[in-house]
Image (cartoon, rainbow, N blue to C red; front, side, top):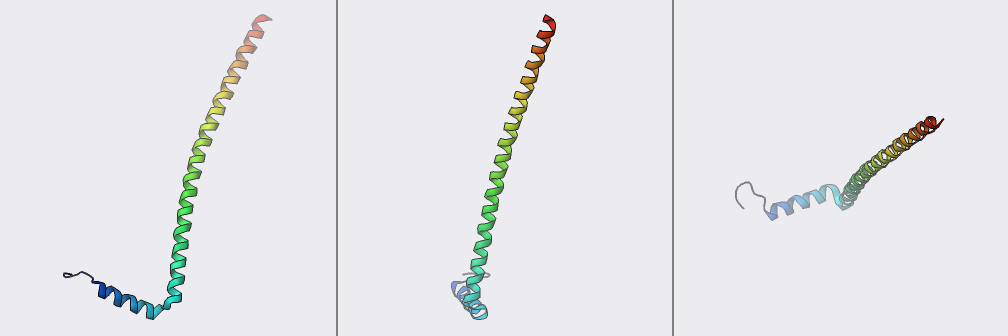
Length: 87
């Protein structure tokens, strides 16, 4: 490679040095911890998205129930007005 590039041999030397310094057991644990963190992050993002969607549908449902309650109240008022007009 040109200037500033990293060749495969340089990467292998760095890998061997890291293995000698930390050992395979620590690197395996590090990989497991990193994988668990990524998995937890993904599940949290999915839970946040599903909670956001459910709150939107709950908001729509509550709006619909409020509308139906308002219509019921208006119907009751008009029925009461009709009863008062008869009396």
